[in-house]
Image 1 (cartoon, rainbow, N blue to C red):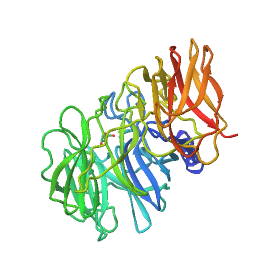
Image 2 (cartoon, rainbow, N blue to C red; image 1 turned 90 degrees about the horizontal axis):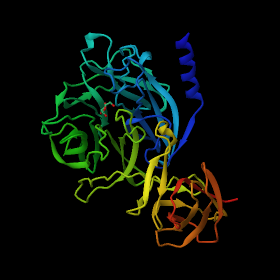
Image 3 (spheres, rainbow, N blue to C red; image 1 turned 180 degrees about the vertical axis):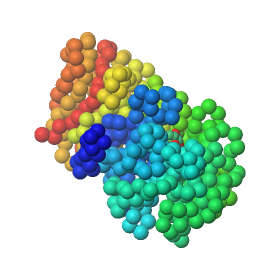
Length: 451
Ligand code: FUB
């Protein structure tokens, strides 16, 4: 009966699409998401992450470790508004997966001849497939499913973190990790190996390597992967002239996470003339780094094809519509003193963050807000201040023109204050919140109103 109800709920999530609207990092704020593989299908970006959950008592491979039951898929056409299409594969509906193993780790998805092949690692219930993790496939006619799992995992593959590259000649290659990084050719059917797995040589020997993501750009094949060079994982890459190598180490894409998140896992896409790096950190779970969240930042290549290091940002990517609730805590820049960001609720972290300005002239800047052609008439600011005080919203930079002056009364709870916005040249601007008084003010969001 319980299974029936669960199945019914899963079907409902397929029918009723839920929309998450977050332009900034992390991009999904109502659940944990990790190991993001982004793929472009018919000019839409589809995101296939792992789905971290808090471990039910006694579940998962180890206590206080990774715990994942299923996969959701998300899509976006602007990288700022993401639609959650619901669960596409869940552990106990895959015939070969060990029931309740809660280890649906990093997946990938690729399209071939109009079919979508979703690759995922999990422990198999039957030891004939080997100990540890196997990698299986589920197949769909559309990127968001419904996906039908194959009856067995891919024979001959033992490991985690699958990634598939289809080369220009149509040959598909499967990469995965199991201490080393492996590659093997896939048959035309995409669910069986066409060659013996090979260990990819010339990669660092010391420190864990996992999560391969391979792509081709201007005839260079990039094998990118997380590797523990020092304390935690950083993103590194090697380059070669064929999908099977030989590869040569070429550099670091992203340093270790400053907050100590032990894993990182990533993918890269070129979408509408810009390269993007999808990766994860534990933003919504600062005290437990196995509950992670997907982030996106822009990525740039040097003229010689090497990759410029990506510095993680909170602002993320994309342009924010002015009528949205703009969360300045996802800032682009802030003053060196007197400007802080904290969680609103440290227990329910899904409530997000707040900006705290504590001293006169402290400021926080949020870049790329689209005011459109019609100027807003007023602005709402959700604030909290036990003493009351005054804020200014300035345009473009901390010394820019004042757009609005907001007088805040002493409050004992969060309140929304409305202030007028005078005429100015609309278009795309940065906005800067500046504290004019000397009393601390907390800001949840600002939102401009056009009517
Ligand atoms: O999410 C579980 C594992 O953590 C992934 O498979 C690894 O790549 C690491 O991110």
